Image (cartoon, rainbow, N blue to C red; front, side):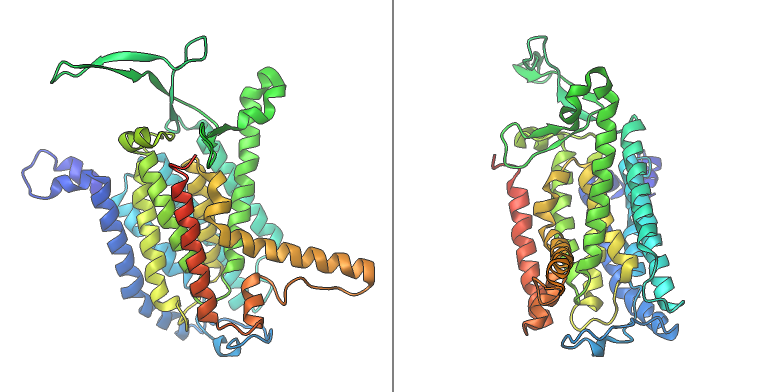
Length: 416
Protein backbone atom coordinates (compact mmCIF):
# COMPACT_ATOMS: atom_id res chain seq x y z
CA UNK A 1 0.00 0.00 0.00
CA UNK A 2 2.80 2.41 0.83
CA UNK A 3 4.20 1.86 -2.68
CA UNK A 4 1.09 3.53 -4.07
CA UNK A 5 1.58 6.40 -1.64
CA UNK A 6 5.00 6.83 -3.24
CA UNK A 7 3.42 6.94 -6.71
CA UNK A 8 0.96 9.58 -5.51
CA UNK A 9 3.74 11.70 -3.97
CA UNK A 10 6.31 11.04 -6.71
CA UNK A 11 6.14 14.57 -8.09
CA UNK A 12 6.60 16.20 -4.69
CA UNK A 13 9.91 17.14 -3.13
CA UNK A 14 9.27 15.37 0.17
CA UNK A 15 12.61 13.84 1.28
CA UNK A 16 12.73 10.05 1.49
CA UNK A 17 9.58 9.34 -0.52
CA UNK A 18 11.60 7.94 -3.43
CA UNK A 19 12.96 5.10 -1.30
CA UNK A 20 9.66 3.25 -1.60
CA UNK A 21 10.31 2.53 -5.25
CA UNK A 22 13.25 0.27 -4.33
CA UNK A 23 12.69 -3.39 -3.53
CA UNK A 24 15.72 -3.41 -1.22
CA UNK A 25 14.28 -0.64 0.99
CA UNK A 26 10.81 -2.13 1.14
CA UNK A 27 12.28 -5.57 1.93
CA UNK A 28 14.28 -4.11 4.80
CA UNK A 29 11.20 -2.33 6.12
CA UNK A 30 9.16 -5.54 5.87
CA UNK A 31 11.64 -7.62 7.86
CA UNK A 32 11.92 -4.95 10.58
CA UNK A 33 8.14 -4.64 10.92
CA UNK A 34 7.59 -8.42 11.01
CA UNK A 35 10.28 -8.78 13.69
CA UNK A 36 8.63 -6.01 15.69
CA UNK A 37 5.19 -7.61 15.41
CA UNK A 38 6.32 -11.06 16.56
CA UNK A 39 8.49 -9.86 19.43
CA UNK A 40 6.33 -6.96 20.65
CA UNK A 41 2.92 -8.60 20.31
CA UNK A 42 4.00 -12.20 20.81
CA UNK A 43 3.88 -11.90 24.61
CA UNK A 44 0.37 -10.45 24.48
CA UNK A 45 -0.75 -13.29 22.22
CA UNK A 46 0.72 -15.87 24.60
CA UNK A 47 -1.15 -14.33 27.53
CA UNK A 48 -4.36 -14.34 25.50
CA UNK A 49 -3.90 -18.01 24.63
CA UNK A 50 -3.23 -18.78 28.29
CA UNK A 51 -6.39 -16.96 29.40
CA UNK A 52 -8.42 -18.89 26.84
CA UNK A 53 -6.72 -22.10 28.09
CA UNK A 54 -5.53 -22.91 24.59
CA UNK A 55 -2.81 -25.34 25.65
CA UNK A 56 -1.06 -28.27 24.04
CA UNK A 57 -2.34 -31.75 24.88
CA UNK A 58 0.76 -33.93 25.08
CA UNK A 59 0.70 -37.70 24.70
CA UNK A 60 3.17 -39.51 26.94
CA UNK A 61 5.65 -41.06 24.50
CA UNK A 62 8.39 -41.52 27.07
CA UNK A 63 10.48 -38.62 25.78
CA UNK A 64 12.61 -36.50 28.09
CA UNK A 65 11.00 -33.18 29.04
CA UNK A 66 7.78 -34.03 27.23
CA UNK A 67 5.43 -33.95 30.22
CA UNK A 68 6.63 -30.45 31.18
CA UNK A 69 5.32 -29.14 27.85
CA UNK A 70 1.74 -30.01 28.69
CA UNK A 71 -0.40 -26.87 28.75
CA UNK A 72 2.05 -24.76 26.74
CA UNK A 73 -0.03 -22.35 24.60
CA UNK A 74 -0.50 -23.51 21.02
CA UNK A 75 -1.94 -21.93 17.85
CA UNK A 76 0.95 -19.42 18.03
CA UNK A 77 1.12 -19.71 14.25
CA UNK A 78 -1.41 -16.89 14.23
CA UNK A 79 1.44 -14.57 15.26
CA UNK A 80 3.53 -15.75 12.30
CA UNK A 81 0.67 -15.36 9.82
CA UNK A 82 -0.12 -11.83 11.01
CA UNK A 83 3.58 -10.87 10.90
CA UNK A 84 3.83 -12.10 7.29
CA UNK A 85 0.61 -10.71 5.90
CA UNK A 86 0.60 -7.19 7.39
CA UNK A 87 4.13 -6.11 6.25
CA UNK A 88 3.45 -7.60 2.82
CA UNK A 89 0.23 -5.62 2.49
CA UNK A 90 2.02 -2.45 3.56
CA UNK A 91 5.21 -2.66 1.50
CA UNK A 92 4.58 -4.90 -1.52
CA UNK A 93 2.86 -4.02 -4.78
CA UNK A 94 -0.59 -5.58 -4.55
CA UNK A 95 -1.05 -5.61 -8.33
CA UNK A 96 1.70 -8.23 -8.57
CA UNK A 97 0.24 -11.68 -9.29
CA UNK A 98 3.03 -13.44 -7.38
CA UNK A 99 2.41 -11.40 -4.22
CA UNK A 100 -1.32 -12.16 -4.42
CA UNK A 101 -0.58 -15.88 -4.85
CA UNK A 102 1.64 -15.93 -1.76
CA UNK A 103 -0.89 -14.02 0.34
CA UNK A 104 -3.66 -16.44 -0.66
CA UNK A 105 -1.39 -19.42 0.06
CA UNK A 106 -0.53 -18.07 3.50
CA UNK A 107 -4.13 -17.35 4.46
CA UNK A 108 -5.58 -20.56 3.01
CA UNK A 109 -3.15 -23.02 4.58
CA UNK A 110 -3.20 -21.02 7.79
CA UNK A 111 -6.99 -21.46 7.85
CA UNK A 112 -6.72 -25.23 7.34
CA UNK A 113 -4.18 -25.43 10.16
CA UNK A 114 -6.36 -23.23 12.38
CA UNK A 115 -9.35 -25.53 11.87
CA UNK A 116 -7.16 -28.52 12.75
CA UNK A 117 -5.92 -26.84 15.95
CA UNK A 118 -9.43 -25.67 16.85
CA UNK A 119 -10.77 -29.23 16.66
CA UNK A 120 -7.90 -30.48 18.83
CA UNK A 121 -8.07 -27.74 21.46
CA UNK A 122 -11.71 -26.74 21.75
CA UNK A 123 -13.45 -29.94 20.65
CA UNK A 124 -10.95 -32.11 22.56
CA UNK A 125 -10.44 -34.35 19.53
CA UNK A 126 -6.76 -35.32 19.47
CA UNK A 127 -7.01 -36.47 15.86
CA UNK A 128 -7.85 -32.97 14.68
CA UNK A 129 -9.01 -32.35 11.14
CA UNK A 130 -9.30 -35.59 9.17
CA UNK A 131 -6.29 -36.21 6.95
CA UNK A 132 -8.44 -36.45 3.82
CA UNK A 133 -9.68 -32.89 4.35
CA UNK A 134 -6.13 -31.59 4.77
CA UNK A 135 -5.11 -33.32 1.55
CA UNK A 136 -8.21 -31.96 -0.20
CA UNK A 137 -7.26 -28.44 0.86
CA UNK A 138 -3.66 -28.87 -0.30
CA UNK A 139 -4.78 -30.32 -3.64
CA UNK A 140 -7.24 -27.46 -4.10
CA UNK A 141 -4.48 -24.93 -3.46
CA UNK A 142 -2.21 -26.74 -5.91
CA UNK A 143 -4.88 -26.58 -8.61
CA UNK A 144 -5.44 -22.88 -7.91
CA UNK A 145 -1.70 -22.09 -8.12
CA UNK A 146 -1.33 -24.10 -11.34
CA UNK A 147 -4.40 -22.43 -12.91
CA UNK A 148 -3.09 -18.97 -11.99
CA UNK A 149 0.35 -19.66 -13.48
CA UNK A 150 -1.34 -20.98 -16.62
CA UNK A 151 -4.04 -18.35 -17.11
CA UNK A 152 -2.43 -15.12 -15.89
CA UNK A 153 -0.87 -12.99 -18.61
CA UNK A 154 1.54 -11.58 -16.00
CA UNK A 155 3.22 -14.96 -15.47
CA UNK A 156 5.99 -15.23 -18.04
CA UNK A 157 9.70 -15.96 -18.31
CA UNK A 158 12.19 -14.25 -20.61
CA UNK A 159 13.80 -16.49 -23.21
CA UNK A 160 16.19 -16.00 -26.10
CA UNK A 161 14.56 -15.98 -29.54
CA UNK A 162 15.93 -18.76 -31.72
CA UNK A 163 16.48 -18.89 -35.44
CA UNK A 164 15.06 -21.71 -37.60
CA UNK A 165 18.42 -23.49 -37.23
CA UNK A 166 18.11 -23.52 -33.42
CA UNK A 167 20.73 -20.88 -32.61
CA UNK A 168 20.03 -17.86 -30.40
CA UNK A 169 19.42 -14.69 -32.40
CA UNK A 170 21.52 -11.64 -31.58
CA UNK A 171 21.21 -8.02 -32.61
CA UNK A 172 23.49 -4.98 -32.68
CA UNK A 173 22.61 -2.37 -30.04
CA UNK A 174 24.04 1.15 -30.05
CA UNK A 175 24.69 2.83 -26.70
CA UNK A 176 22.91 6.23 -26.96
CA UNK A 177 25.52 7.94 -24.74
CA UNK A 178 28.81 6.58 -26.08
CA UNK A 179 27.75 5.50 -29.55
CA UNK A 180 29.49 2.16 -29.04
CA UNK A 181 28.00 -0.94 -30.63
CA UNK A 182 27.56 -4.31 -28.93
CA UNK A 183 25.83 -7.58 -29.61
CA UNK A 184 22.99 -8.73 -27.38
CA UNK A 185 20.55 -11.63 -27.53
CA UNK A 186 17.04 -11.05 -28.85
CA UNK A 187 14.58 -11.97 -26.11
CA UNK A 188 10.84 -12.35 -25.61
CA UNK A 189 8.57 -12.96 -22.62
CA UNK A 190 6.65 -16.23 -23.02
CA UNK A 191 4.41 -18.62 -21.12
CA UNK A 192 6.52 -21.56 -20.11
CA UNK A 193 6.62 -24.70 -17.98
CA UNK A 194 10.39 -24.57 -17.69
CA UNK A 195 12.18 -24.88 -14.38
CA UNK A 196 15.76 -25.02 -13.11
CA UNK A 197 17.88 -28.16 -12.80
CA UNK A 198 20.78 -27.85 -10.32
CA UNK A 199 24.40 -28.66 -11.17
CA UNK A 200 23.81 -28.93 -14.94
CA UNK A 201 25.30 -26.60 -17.53
CA UNK A 202 22.20 -25.85 -19.62
CA UNK A 203 20.18 -26.08 -16.47
CA UNK A 204 16.61 -25.81 -17.64
CA UNK A 205 14.01 -28.59 -17.66
CA UNK A 206 10.69 -28.29 -19.47
CA UNK A 207 7.74 -30.36 -18.26
CA UNK A 208 6.71 -30.55 -21.93
CA UNK A 209 9.54 -33.01 -22.49
CA UNK A 210 7.61 -35.56 -20.40
CA UNK A 211 4.70 -35.50 -22.87
CA UNK A 212 6.63 -34.99 -26.10
CA UNK A 213 5.14 -38.26 -27.39
CA UNK A 214 1.65 -36.64 -27.41
CA UNK A 215 2.38 -34.51 -30.47
CA UNK A 216 0.08 -31.49 -30.79
CA UNK A 217 -1.64 -32.36 -27.52
CA UNK A 218 1.64 -31.74 -25.66
CA UNK A 219 0.99 -27.98 -25.69
CA UNK A 220 -1.85 -28.39 -23.16
CA UNK A 221 -0.94 -31.76 -21.65
CA UNK A 222 2.29 -30.26 -20.26
CA UNK A 223 0.17 -28.01 -18.02
CA UNK A 224 -1.61 -31.07 -16.63
CA UNK A 225 1.76 -32.60 -15.71
CA UNK A 226 2.87 -29.25 -14.29
CA UNK A 227 -0.28 -29.02 -12.15
CA UNK A 228 0.25 -32.55 -10.81
CA UNK A 229 3.84 -31.68 -9.93
CA UNK A 230 2.71 -28.52 -8.09
CA UNK A 231 0.08 -30.47 -6.12
CA UNK A 232 2.67 -33.09 -5.13
CA UNK A 233 5.19 -30.43 -4.06
CA UNK A 234 2.70 -28.44 -1.96
CA UNK A 235 1.30 -31.55 -0.26
CA UNK A 236 4.71 -33.07 0.45
CA UNK A 237 6.45 -29.95 1.78
CA UNK A 238 3.46 -28.74 3.80
CA UNK A 239 3.03 -32.10 5.54
CA UNK A 240 6.80 -32.46 6.02
CA UNK A 241 6.95 -29.11 7.81
CA UNK A 242 4.11 -30.30 10.00
CA UNK A 243 6.06 -33.46 10.92
CA UNK A 244 9.21 -31.44 11.62
CA UNK A 245 7.37 -29.29 14.16
CA UNK A 246 8.09 -31.64 17.05
CA UNK A 247 10.90 -29.91 18.94
CA UNK A 248 11.15 -26.36 20.24
CA UNK A 249 12.29 -24.09 17.42
CA UNK A 250 13.04 -26.87 14.93
CA UNK A 251 10.47 -26.14 12.22
CA UNK A 252 10.66 -22.37 12.82
CA UNK A 253 14.44 -22.12 12.49
CA UNK A 254 14.61 -24.52 9.55
CA UNK A 255 11.91 -22.56 7.72
CA UNK A 256 13.76 -19.28 8.34
CA UNK A 257 16.94 -20.71 6.78
CA UNK A 258 15.07 -22.03 3.73
CA UNK A 259 13.17 -18.75 3.39
CA UNK A 260 16.35 -16.68 3.40
CA UNK A 261 17.81 -18.86 0.65
CA UNK A 262 14.68 -18.57 -1.47
CA UNK A 263 14.81 -14.82 -0.98
CA UNK A 264 18.27 -14.70 -2.54
CA UNK A 265 17.12 -16.84 -5.46
CA UNK A 266 14.02 -14.68 -5.99
CA UNK A 267 16.01 -11.45 -5.97
CA UNK A 268 18.56 -12.58 -8.57
CA UNK A 269 15.88 -14.25 -10.71
CA UNK A 270 13.88 -11.02 -10.79
CA UNK A 271 16.86 -8.77 -11.53
CA UNK A 272 17.76 -8.65 -15.21
CA UNK A 273 21.41 -7.74 -14.53
CA UNK A 274 22.09 -10.48 -11.95
CA UNK A 275 20.19 -13.14 -13.88
CA UNK A 276 22.17 -12.33 -17.02
CA UNK A 277 25.46 -12.40 -15.10
CA UNK A 278 24.62 -15.71 -13.43
CA UNK A 279 23.13 -17.07 -16.67
CA UNK A 280 19.90 -18.10 -14.97
CA UNK A 281 16.26 -17.78 -15.95
CA UNK A 282 14.96 -14.20 -15.72
CA UNK A 283 11.38 -13.96 -14.45
CA UNK A 284 9.87 -10.47 -14.87
CA UNK A 285 8.29 -8.98 -11.72
CA UNK A 286 9.26 -11.90 -9.47
CA UNK A 287 11.74 -9.70 -7.59
CA UNK A 288 8.75 -8.23 -5.71
CA UNK A 289 8.58 -11.53 -3.83
CA UNK A 290 11.72 -10.46 -1.98
CA UNK A 291 9.45 -8.26 0.14
CA UNK A 292 7.16 -11.16 1.00
CA UNK A 293 10.03 -13.48 1.90
CA UNK A 294 11.61 -10.73 4.02
CA UNK A 295 8.42 -10.59 6.07
CA UNK A 296 8.51 -14.41 6.23
CA UNK A 297 12.08 -14.37 7.57
CA UNK A 298 11.28 -11.67 10.12
CA UNK A 299 8.18 -13.55 11.30
CA UNK A 300 9.97 -16.88 11.77
CA UNK A 301 13.08 -15.41 13.40
CA UNK A 302 10.93 -13.22 15.65
CA UNK A 303 8.78 -16.21 16.62
CA UNK A 304 11.94 -17.99 17.78
CA UNK A 305 12.10 -15.40 20.59
CA UNK A 306 9.29 -17.35 22.25
CA UNK A 307 9.50 -20.70 20.46
CA UNK A 308 13.17 -21.57 21.12
CA UNK A 309 13.93 -24.00 23.94
CA UNK A 310 12.16 -23.99 26.34
CA UNK A 311 9.22 -22.91 24.21
CA UNK A 312 6.70 -20.47 25.66
CA UNK A 313 4.34 -21.09 22.73
CA UNK A 314 3.91 -23.65 19.95
CA UNK A 315 2.94 -22.67 16.42
CA UNK A 316 0.57 -25.62 16.01
CA UNK A 317 -0.72 -26.72 12.62
CA UNK A 318 -1.82 -23.11 12.09
CA UNK A 319 1.83 -22.24 11.55
CA UNK A 320 3.51 -25.44 10.37
CA UNK A 321 1.14 -26.21 7.47
CA UNK A 322 1.37 -22.60 6.29
CA UNK A 323 5.18 -22.45 6.52
CA UNK A 324 5.63 -25.60 4.45
CA UNK A 325 3.09 -24.49 1.87
CA UNK A 326 4.70 -21.05 1.58
CA UNK A 327 8.12 -22.57 0.86
CA UNK A 328 6.59 -24.95 -1.70
CA UNK A 329 4.59 -22.35 -3.65
CA UNK A 330 7.44 -19.84 -3.49
CA UNK A 331 9.82 -22.40 -5.00
CA UNK A 332 7.37 -23.16 -7.81
CA UNK A 333 6.87 -19.49 -8.64
CA UNK A 334 10.61 -18.76 -8.95
CA UNK A 335 11.10 -22.00 -10.94
CA UNK A 336 13.37 -23.63 -8.35
CA UNK A 337 11.11 -26.49 -7.19
CA UNK A 338 13.63 -29.17 -8.20
CA UNK A 339 15.97 -27.66 -5.58
CA UNK A 340 13.50 -28.46 -2.77
CA UNK A 341 15.00 -31.89 -1.89
CA UNK A 342 18.32 -30.12 -1.35
CA UNK A 343 17.14 -26.87 0.24
CA UNK A 344 14.46 -28.52 2.40
CA UNK A 345 16.56 -31.60 3.10
CA UNK A 346 15.58 -31.54 6.79
CA UNK A 347 11.90 -31.72 5.87
CA UNK A 348 12.64 -34.49 3.36
CA UNK A 349 14.50 -36.65 5.88
CA UNK A 350 11.79 -36.14 8.51
CA UNK A 351 9.14 -37.21 5.99
CA UNK A 352 11.13 -40.21 4.77
CA UNK A 353 11.80 -41.39 8.33
CA UNK A 354 8.05 -41.68 8.94
CA UNK A 355 7.42 -43.40 5.60
CA UNK A 356 10.25 -45.90 6.17
CA UNK A 357 9.19 -46.58 9.76
CA UNK A 358 5.54 -47.24 8.88
CA UNK A 359 6.32 -49.27 5.75
CA UNK A 360 8.88 -51.48 7.50
CA UNK A 361 6.62 -52.00 10.53
CA UNK A 362 3.72 -53.13 8.32
CA UNK A 363 5.94 -55.33 6.18
CA UNK A 364 7.57 -57.12 9.13
CA UNK A 365 4.24 -57.54 10.90
CA UNK A 366 2.79 -59.17 7.81
CA UNK A 367 5.84 -61.38 7.27
CA UNK A 368 6.88 -62.25 10.84
CA UNK A 369 3.68 -61.57 12.76
CA UNK A 370 5.45 -58.86 14.76
CA UNK A 371 6.12 -55.31 13.66
CA UNK A 372 9.74 -54.14 13.74
CA UNK A 373 11.18 -50.64 13.62
CA UNK A 374 14.07 -49.04 11.80
CA UNK A 375 14.24 -46.05 14.15
CA UNK A 376 13.66 -45.92 17.89
CA UNK A 377 10.85 -43.46 17.06
CA UNK A 378 9.81 -41.40 14.08
CA UNK A 379 10.01 -38.65 12.90
CA UNK A 380 13.77 -38.93 13.14
CA UNK A 381 14.24 -36.07 15.64
CA UNK A 382 12.48 -38.27 18.21
CA UNK A 383 14.90 -41.09 17.38
CA UNK A 384 17.76 -38.90 18.60
CA UNK A 385 15.78 -37.95 21.69
CA UNK A 386 15.37 -41.64 22.48
CA UNK A 387 19.15 -41.98 22.19
CA UNK A 388 19.51 -39.49 25.03
CA UNK A 389 20.57 -36.39 23.09
CA UNK A 390 19.18 -33.19 24.57
CA UNK A 391 16.43 -31.49 22.60
CA UNK A 392 18.29 -28.17 22.27
CA UNK A 393 21.36 -29.92 20.86
CA UNK A 394 19.28 -31.83 18.29
CA UNK A 395 17.68 -28.59 17.11
CA UNK A 396 21.03 -26.77 16.89
CA UNK A 397 22.55 -29.60 14.85
CA UNK A 398 19.57 -29.72 12.51
CA UNK A 399 19.92 -25.96 12.00
CA UNK A 400 23.61 -26.42 11.13
CA UNK A 401 22.70 -29.09 8.56
CA UNK A 402 20.00 -26.75 7.20
CA UNK A 403 22.55 -23.94 6.78
CA UNK A 404 24.93 -26.29 4.94
CA UNK A 405 22.11 -27.33 2.59
CA UNK A 406 21.16 -23.68 2.06
CA UNK A 407 24.73 -22.80 1.09
CA UNK A 408 24.85 -25.72 -1.35
CA UNK A 409 21.56 -24.53 -2.85
CA UNK A 410 22.95 -21.05 -3.50
CA UNK A 411 26.15 -22.58 -4.88
CA UNK A 412 24.06 -24.25 -7.61
CA UNK A 413 23.77 -20.82 -9.23
CA UNK A 414 27.40 -21.08 -10.35
CA UNK A 415 28.49 -24.72 -10.04
CA UNK A 416 27.30 -26.56 -13.13
